Image (cartoon, rainbow over the protein chains, first blue to last red):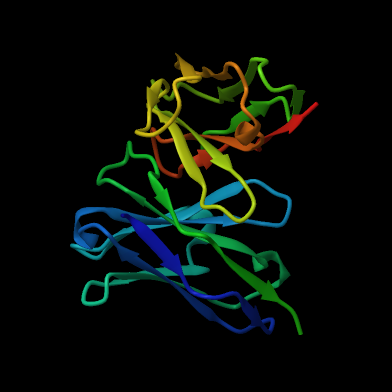
Amino acid sequence: EVKLQQSGDELVRPGASVKISCKASGYTFTSYSMHWVKQRPGQGLEWIGAIIPIIDTTEYNQKFKGKATLTADKSSNTANMELSRLTSEDSAVYYCARSRFGVRQYFDYWGQGVMVTVSS
Amino acid sequence: DVQMTQSPSNLAASPGESVSINCKASKSISKYLAWYQQKPGKANKLLIYSGSTLQSGTPSRFSGSGSGTDFTLTIRNLEPEDFGLYYCQQHNEYPFTFGSGTKLEIK
């Protein structure tokens, strides 16, 4: 069974950074891409970017360049996203989602989401 | 970026009825449109990809149509578990973009 288990909710101070994780199981981690998606409270979904773990190649939405950094740990089948210089605009639920390789791919499995709250 | 305009924002229907949700792209995305269902406490679920291909496990009462810029998700014979939020997403080019969502509620 494919599972994407995300880390727990986070409360962080403005200006700080946070790293959230997505542990994959039930499939070969290096045979798929991992994407990250943002959803602000009551809002729609925004694609942040993706990483291809087998070659550590990333693709970012221009809007999130400098804000999000995607990495992958092949030894633990875990994808990570670090968000830096946090502001209230970064308060959101962040999802990881899997796809096959290539641009024209869709997300066939999603994590449960991590709520990041930025507050002093 | 490709803008996705989804309508309606809200929809109310009764079990057994049929509904349609529309998604319009700001430029041609060929057939590359996906539909997802979002429900509280559950992982987002892929329903349809490439415009009309049902993901494994998606009930046959769901169907997708369209190409180019105009797409439709149709749900026939609504079941109680079908109520929730639905999003379209273009998967033709980076950055992937989503529609603003449709909330399907019980009438």
